Image 1 (cartoon, helix red, strand yellow):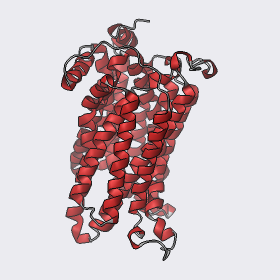
Image 2: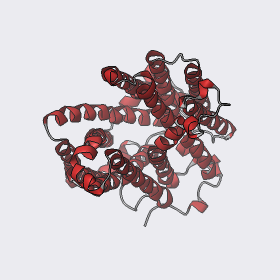
Image 3: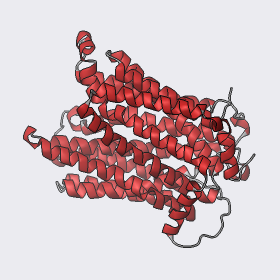
Image 4: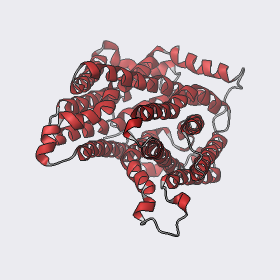
Length: 454
């Protein structure tokens, strides 16, 4: 059972809403998401294979990988509140067109530097910083555009589609990127191929740029429904950022959403960080008995997690969310996600490790969709981009903290203990939250605080 109306009778163009138009927007932006992950993969290949290929260069490689990782992730999170305030005050279609154009130009710059042998660590890191900032503006505009195309009844399906996109990118983008990077070798390095293209990295950068061009064209051709009238803005962008934080932090029931998202990222980070060690050491005996090398074990675990994420996202996009409170869906999803992490941590077999990854990531789609649906239905339209951006700034900021803590703990304890303990902590936290006396009325209190008591 679900509480969604038949989509045949929803989003038929009344008030400008059109689910088919949303599907066009979603498909084009999903393509650009694949392109972004291809670039990240290609940059890491370039660092390992071309820039620091020698075993004696491991310290330099470690610094380079850290630099690239920070350049790709930190500016994205830091810029989110500003991007959200900007998106609330300006036309979202223009922001999407402009950000896709900037991202395409940055991809062209990467291709040019790669072909002219001018690519080095510093310019690459600077390009990735600009890439991350542009992505933050793209995300703020796109995340807050759902409601323009999709009715409230179909928001869970739209959210499920986005979760499917991220899971598919996790599952397929690395293989696609590896194919593009290896394209010259796969073609037998034909003599007609220019010498500058004998290295496949430019192919990956070019593919990313092409995805942004396609996304730009699709967005430019779409007719965005008019946004609800908003009160005239006062003050500058920083005032808008403060308004976004103030709106959320002054509404106590919404603190639960922020806390839950942050705690989920904090306690799920150990599994993502320490999975390579689990695949190499924890299940080593079973892998040897099965004749599986380490690389195959790690691939199976990652594929199982990605497959679980895809199935969870598809289920939500087709069926919507169950007929129960969104907060309860989030709590139950966290319990199952934590149990999946425990299974992955304690398992001493390859297929047990894969099962834990599958169970955990299969609930990421329902968890995030329930959260996004609450934010999108309860937040005033003129505040939505800021609310989502602030939520991402706070919740995703917990992930690097969880990574640092789990890395520190893994030096002092067995990695599987750190992973299983983190999963158990997540499951216990969610269970305690659901057993609290006020949990049954939490969503109602959110609606009242947001001025949506219906």
